[in-house]
Amino acid sequence: MSRIYVTRPFLPDINEFVNEIEPIFDSHILTNMGPVYNKFQHRLKDYLDVPELSLFVNGHMALEMAIQAFDLDKAGRERGGGEVITTPFTFVSTIHAIKRNGLTPVFCDINSDDYCIDADKIGSLITDKTVAIIPVHVYGHICDTDKIEGIAKQHGLTVIYDGAHAFGETYKGVGVGNFGDATMFSFHATKVFNTIEGGAIAFKDKAHSLPLHELKNFGIHDEEHIGAVGGNAKLDEFRCAMGICNLRHVDECIAARKEVHDKYHERLDGIKGLTLSSPGKDVKPNYAYMPLYVEPEEFGRTRDDLYKALKRKGIFARKYFYPALNEIDIYKDCPGGETRIAADVSRKILTLPIYDSLALETVDEICEIIRG
Ligand code: T4K
Image 1 (cartoon, rainbow, N blue to C red):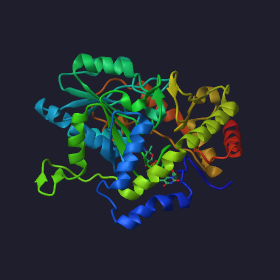
Image 2 (image 1 turned 180 degrees about the horizontal axis):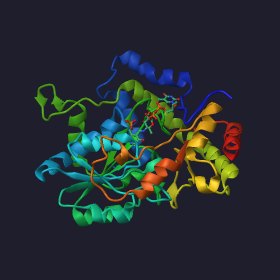
Image 3 (image 1 turned 90 degrees about the horizontal axis):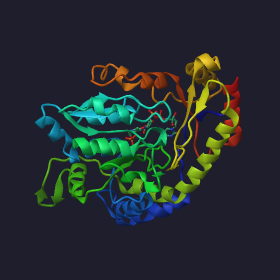
Image 4 (image 1 turned 30 degrees about the vertical axis):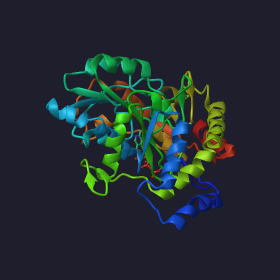
C-alpha cells in the first residue's frame, strides 16, 4: 500500500483552474481584494447562507482578527485582564488566537459523546472578567448553540465559534455560520473545502464589516486615509480562484466522504472498546474527520498501539487533539474547571484517514489492521 495520510486535499482538474486564473493573467491584479476575490466572496456567502462574510488569508488570522474586531481585547483591558471560556480539546490555533489578543483562556471540559464544550459547565467558570465564549465545533460536531447562547445573553458575553471543521454544515436547517455573534471557517489544504490556505469570518452585525476590513488591510480606507491600526491578512486572487473551482465540487467531495464514513462504521461498529463518531441529531454533516475512541480495557489495545500498527503499514492516522492544551507548558497555568473528559479523550482518540478520493478498499485494509 502506498502511504496514506489522514487527509489529502481535493484539487480541481488543472484546466478548470487555468480557466479560472486566466483573467488574473490578463488583469495583473494579483491581490488586494480584486474581482476574483469579490466573485468568490459572493458565491461563498450564498453557499454558507450567512448574512455577512469576510475572507482572510487563513482561519487563524480570521479568528485572531475577529476577537479584535469585536473589541474583546479592549473589554479585557478595561477589566484588568479579560477571560475567554473555551476548551482544551482543539487545535492550538484557537487558544493562541485568544492569548495573542492579550486575553486569558479559561478551560472548560467537553462532552464525552461529541467532544464539544460541555455547556452545563460554562456557568461556573464565568467571573467579572469574562468577556466571551469561544466554543469549537470540533470534528464538525455542532456545539449546543441554544444553551451557549442562552448563557451568553444572560451574562452579556460575545460568542465566536471556531468552526474550522464545520464548513457547509447546517443545524436544524440553518447554516452553521449563523450561530452566535460570529463563526470562523478554515479553508486550509487539510479541510473539507480548501483554497490552499484561507479562512473567513461569518457574522451577523454589518457594523463589524469595517473593523474586519481595516484589520486585514492595514487600516486603509482609501489612498489618503488610514482609519485604524491594521495588519495584512488578505486572501489573494489565485487562492480565491481555487476556492471558486473547489466550491463547484464540494458537495461531491462531501458525498464521497460519507461513503468512507459509512464503510468505517460497517467494518468497526459493534467491536467492544471502539467507538466511531456519528453526526449529531439535526446536523447536515460534512464528514470532516473520522475520530475513533479506543477504550483499552475493553479493546485490549491502546490508541497508541493502533497508531503504531497503522504507521508500520504506511497509514498515518493522527492524534488530533493530543495533548489537551491545558497540559502543555505554555497553557498549563491557565484557569479553568476540572477537564477530566478532555484529558481522557485526548489520550484515547485517533483520527483515521478520510477524504473524497480515499478508496473504499483502502478503508477495508485500514479496518483489518485495526481489527487485528
Ligand atoms: N481551529 C481549529 C479547530 C483548527 O483545526 C485549525 C486548523 C485552525 C483553527 C486554524 O485554521 P488555519 O489557520 O489552518 O486555516 C493541520 C492544519 O495545518 C490545520 O489547518 C488544521 N487545523 C489542523 C487540525 O491540522 P498539521 O500540522 O497536523 O498538518 P500536516 O501538515 O501534518 O498535515 C496533515 C496531513 O495532511 C499530512 O500528513 C499530509 C496531508 N497534507 C497536508 C498538507 C498541508 C497533504 O496531503 N497536503 C497538504 O498540502 O495541522
